[in-house]
Amino acid sequence: MKILVTGGAGFMGSAFVRHVLANHPEDLIVNLDKLTYAGNLDNLKEVEKNDRYKFVKGDITDEPIVSKLAADQVDVIVNFAAETHVDRSILNPRDFIMTDIVGTYNLLEATKKYKIARYIQISTDEVFGSTPKKFIEESKFDPSSPYSASKAGADLLCSAYTKTYQLPIVVTHACNNYGPYHYPEKLIPLAITNLLENKKVPVYGDGKQVREWLYVDDHARAIDMLVRKEDVDSVYNIGTGEELANLDLVKRLLQLLNKDESYIEFVKDRPAHDQRYALDSSRLREVGFKPKIKLDDGLAKTVKWFQDSRWWWDKLKSGEYLEYYKKQYQSK
Ligand code: NAD
Ligand code: DAU
Image (cartoon, rainbow, N blue to C red; front, side, top):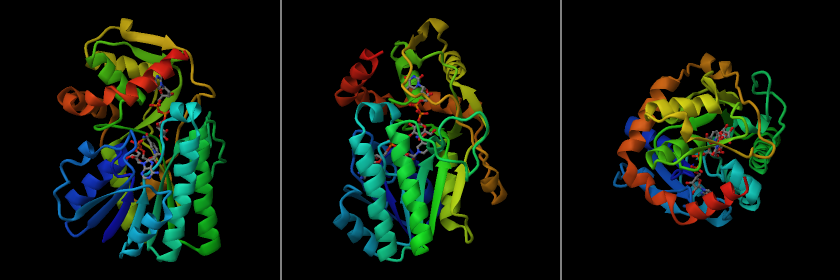
């Protein structure tokens, strides 16, 4: 099978690329990625010499490049490419609208034109907004940030293309992923790397906001299953049921790194901060997917990976990152 992966140099896309190449000896992967600040070829070092893998630097908003790659005997497209960080979307929404909506439109057009057998859109639980009870796949969209509104726009395009053109599209709504190669602007890698640098961890508001956590390799397994399964639904939630308040999560990381609570710094809250995300993932369970990594084990593995991988993250926390970081935390 030939898979066109977009955004495969990011955190979750690279986990999927590594997983497929390691587990499916017949598969070919073409990875189209713009290499934004979040895209990183270091994430793909272990596959870069694999002759079943090809990297193409390019933008999904660029119609000719998307069309050229999709035309070349692709069986499945998996779209991980996106601007993904909520706080950046609040500072500057434009790139989110371009990549997350216009980029998805280009990929859907290519799916239609070249009769791609399956298109998988990697989406998020954030499209549903905040919830007192678990979201099902049919819950109403109620996005709170420019990021989640852009993702919701792309998901609606997917559902319109399914209805109008009968395209074989699957949209997945995953909860918060974590694990190796997670860019250190997101809560878990930011907290771990700050603590390894002896710096405090910024906690927004009162830290009582709840997120559901999924180890990134489990996410890769779930997508891999949806790539290959014969009969699929058009939408799946991907969660674990393992929910935790941000403050409790940070306290677990402090414990794993032998630091006390003086390393917590409460800062101004994120505007329109969603209080809780929680998914009902029974549809995916019914077709046979079960996460393997429990949160406690996953956090311990992740901390160990960051301890051993300073070569990977040290250089990321300078340059553009520092500029963003100063701007972000200045406004608190
Ligand atoms: P990431 O920010 O780590 O990586 C995004 C990748 O997309 C990068 O490699 C970047 O270079 C690439 N990219 C950005 N704009 C592009 C463009 N115009 N053309 C081509 N490539 C482009 O993101 P991630 O955390 O790996 O998230 C991957 C996908 O999963 C996103 O669609 C995101 O919305 C979704 N998602 C993320 C999470 C999470 O917890 N991280 C949870 C649910 C869903
Ligand atoms: O739920 C899935 C989403 O998870 C994905 O769609 C997004 O792409 C991904 O970025 C992530 O979004 P979150 O906003 O939930 O992740 P983030 O790591 O930015 O924040 C997690 C929680 O921690 C959130 O409630 C905000 C809070 N937070 C975050 C940062 C960066 C802090 O308290 N302090 C921080 O410094």
